[in-house]
Amino acid sequence: MGIFQRLARLIKANINALISKAEDPELQIEQLLREMNEQLIKAKKQVAVAIADEKRLAKQWEQEVRDAKEWERKAMVAVKAGDDALAKEALNRKRQHAELAEQFKAQWEAQKRAVEQLKLALTQLSAKIEEAGRKKTLLIARKKRAEAQKAINETLAGITEGSAFGDFKRMEEKIDQMAAEAEAGVELHAEMSGSDIEEKFRRLEAGPGADVELDELKRKMGILPPVEAAAPATPAAAQSDVSMTDEQLQAEIEKMRKELAEEVPAAAPAAEKKAGA
Image 1 (cartoon, rainbow, N blue to C red):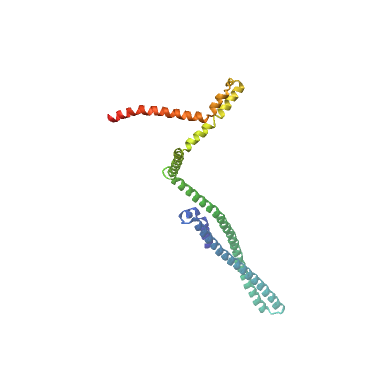
Image 2: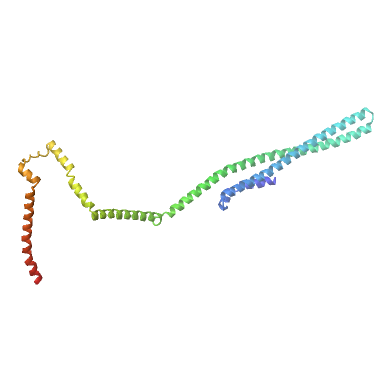
């Protein structure tokens, strides 16, 4: 029964305490289950030996019973033959085998009770080991969840405003600064290349657009007064506004030259006077 006591102590041990002391709880649990199964195999062998002893005692008891009956039959043969002395000897042998049969029977019955107890204990131990195997899966799952939670907690503890979040914020500000510098560069290039002026002229030439349409809608709704028709221009005036003849253009140029010549002599004495001073 020593092996069953060791198995009972092993199975009743606090597995959680062993896990906390082990370097690798999962490997430790596997090792414990291997040891349990090894002890269970040994226990099965001992139970098998006990069962074999029970069967041997039963056979010896049955043999002694048969021997006692056989000597009783021989005693009857001697009595029939008129040999009382031989009959007595046969009866003595019968009594010896009968006594041995009773002893073997007592031993067999005791062994049979022991075997029944061993079988019951073995069944219980096997069930406990199977339960430990099922519990192993739960314990390993708990271990993995604990490891995952620990890793998450360590990660959250490491992410502080002064570390990862701070770095992320600095990178965001740096990207914003780069975008602002790129936008300023585009505007500066547009101003220096004249494209900005051209864009303004394009907007100016495009006209009021939506404003004109809005005024027309208001006039249609009666909110604004209608536009008064302008007086038609005379053909001569319209022609003069549209184009000039070569003679008129030449006369205009000569006029501008004269005005320029009159302005230059007037400005020269003032310049000489300033230089002499």
